[in-house]
Image (cartoon, rainbow, N blue to C red; front, side, top):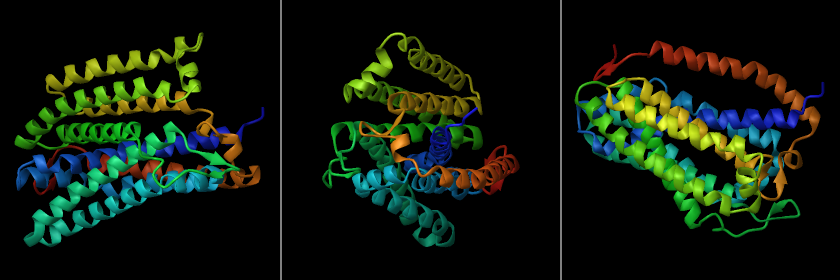
Length: 333
């Protein structure tokens, strides 16, 4: 049986991106919501809940970006020039957030400044990730296998919508993570925030889903042509079921379930994205096979990935297991 290495690598990159979105998404979401928590114990609990894992979560960003360069160099050379401004802003936001996270504890005298930098950096990083997603979905002008657009082609009403959608989605992940991990008044506040963020996320998902088929005729066909619609219709149906369970369990006082159901919502959104895009990596001009590296390169990298990725997954699972349970002002207990 012949294995299509290009498709295998497309799934590897998609998996790495999804892992980054859901794992770094909740700590970016905590940063977005940070100003709503009271100075002192509530903010300290929120920070302590992600202190052991936040930097490890960004491993997946390196794997996704590096894998895109190695496995699909043509796509990398087109997508990056098309989205330089939001990508640069995203990286600056991540730097601000990381510096603020460390200096918040080491420079208590300027803690309000570091709290503001942490929140602003998280918001900018999340919003810019949404802009990049929207820019890819709406398409990139390509001529002779190179980016042929302008400096601001990525900016549109649709990309602003996807940017806002990612921000509220990350806020949902952050609030449900805190419901699971913190206690007392911080947990009660996080539970209220999760209700609002959940409603806002569903509205954003509906708006983006409604707008996307009108970007390209191919998108419309993939979602609504028979008999494919019988399969694609399961995505919004499952989204409604998960949303119902999310609000029901959140109101009943569940701890871990709201976070896991929020992850399920993101997984369904990611599945919808895959339905719209595949097999294009730069719609509507470059497929994954057009952009793929030579087969020997793919085989060589696959050997390394087969060794490294299980190690990353094992370390990640171990870290989350060690730091399971509730966190107080002074750390996990």
